Amino acid sequence: MWMDIENGPRWKRNKKIHRSLFHELRKDSELTEDINRMVDGMFRMFREIDLDELFPKYREDYARTTGKKSLLHARKERPTFSTRRQRKSKKRTTKTSKFSKKDKLRKKNKTSTKRGAVRGALYEGAFQKILDRTPNSSRCLETIESPRGERCRPDGWYDLHGLLNIPIEFKTIGSGMFQVNNMRKMLEQSREQGLIAHYANLQKTVEDNDGVSLLIVCCPRDRTYANFLIDSRIEGKLSHLRGVKSKKRRRREENRKKQRPVD
Image (cartoon, rainbow, N blue to C red):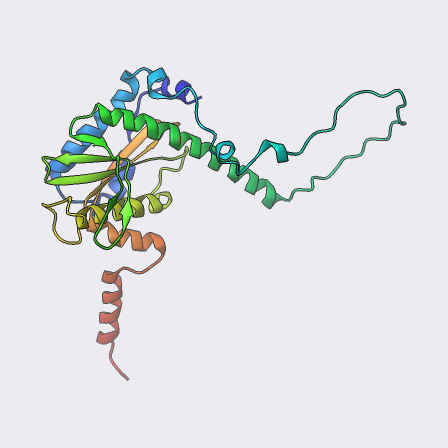
């Protein structure tokens, strides 16, 4: 199915989602332009590389491999064979479903989650193959750890002359989900990776508490993608998405209270 989707329209950059986060991204025009050019080249490779090489023919079934869900415990259906003695046919009555609307919605969400996991696994493997062919980038083969004990393993690295190693996180989303409100966990994960890389002394040209990271998000069905260069400027947006007031807003509210006249 995904190979048929890749044979469809070409990839296009989602400029609308980038404009909505423009003021929360890192202000470095030269670096941003280089990374945008690199990401555009990556998604062009999706069309240039043979799909048989890009996607695997077989995928490991995690549930059956780990034994968490065994086929031996599956519900067995009764054999449908005819017998000589047949019971009298009863009148058919309309049966009401024993599943409620919540159960049906929960089952639908499980199905979409499983499809999303398969989509993410396939495209993450394809993305790592594309990283091997992209200049100044490579796969991440080891887990990095900061002096604080925090660990992460991004999907790849963008190496800027050995002075700035930017962790790359690649994510896929479903159709119609390309909105900032749906990307909170992705932004938080990428932000954490930037901080860990900075504290691990992999970003020598970055100021304290900045921690630069790169997040690449794409929607295969809608054929759109976007990339975000993240640093400390994203903190205000993340607190807003969590429903927590930012430090700047709290200071404003405190100043307004101080300026109010006392009766």
